[in-house]
Image (cartoon, rainbow, N blue to C red; front, top):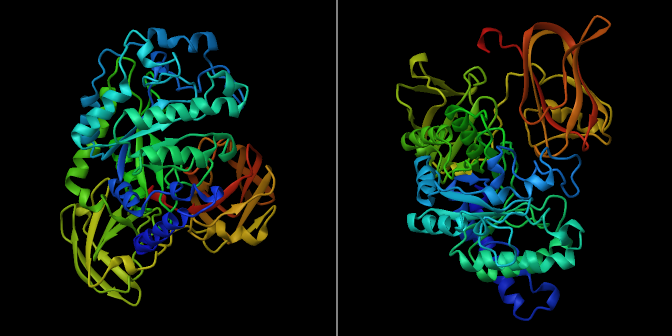
Length: 558
């Protein structure tokens, strides 16, 4: 994989940077602090799967952490909880059942190898014993430092420990006034506390929202952090690229040149929500497979209850993931994504001369996989059963009986006669009937065909918040499902008014309309016959970006 090939080069560059810094001017003093070492990035990358926890006194009301607060700095709209109520919830927060060791146990049972917890979210309440504020967990009836107890429990159990920290603080008067110079001592002071008083910190997950390097004095902040925690890995949300990208609530597109981690909620909310609806164990496993197959890590979030426990329904789902990983973890942990890129069929991972194929959809699985350019010495089913294969000019065909096709994933283990890391990423064509369509767009016609090229790494972007895309299938064709992938983060105000139509005679007939598309939009319907399909975006909070529009006839194979 390219990341591994560059490992020694990055090491050399880091040494050069350190050496150069000895005689550098003030403007370059921060260079060694802006990136983690290749060794620490590899450790982070190999952990693969982690537990994210958003937790504070907002759990008392079962509402979203911080975002439920009525007044939110520089954020459109209002939360549902008046400030006078939200800001005083901490006085009733007393999670007597909290046991840090049990949190670690839940994570270990889930097969997770690191934990990241909110130390302070946008609302400003601190879950640690900061000496710079009274708005903190140790100033409640509970009176204990949650972060200290969890850090100690992680260290004792050999679990990597990370912290989430929101630079925005809707409770601090200087931040509310946007006086960033006055706010700086508070930000720097709290980071010094966290990096000095809680033992080894493996990761810092910043969440800077709309501000950047200028407001947060990021270079100076990174120098402070890495001086105190030299092995820490930092995400991209502090105004500089830092160490890794962090797509939110989506599985990131295949990327084996940059480190990345998808953070995603188990339910519909980051913090605990009354009667929330959760993803199933199988859904989570499929998300994990797709993420690792894209060469990323997965940070799966749960919100502890106001009592201090992880809701049993959530713990049971996590335990199911751990049970699956106990059987098939060799195809997930510390592997590279590819060589086959993830798509509807599934995903692949590799290490050394071994490739694992995770078949997630047999409808989308091709009859022939593209050849890998290396001899297949052995093929076996990790999930059990019999497999045969043949390879010819068409590619590789795997023969697996129906009884040996498992859910949520059938795992094929291939042993190659060479290093799989040398194989360039391979796209598996989908069965979309739009692959040969002529695409016409309202703007940027030169990028239009990227919408049907089966590659989510290519995209079409509009120059305005209103736009349209039209597919000409070339002839009247039957179809009963349309998938659309909209790019961007889930928290961004993306498409909020759209219409999806097909043309019958001279009339455009509406298939769907709504206020959200997102990464995983899919609509199934009774079979239609048409040549033309159109997506009309009437409004979007940001400039719309789409990478794929796929059209299928699945029939009874839905």
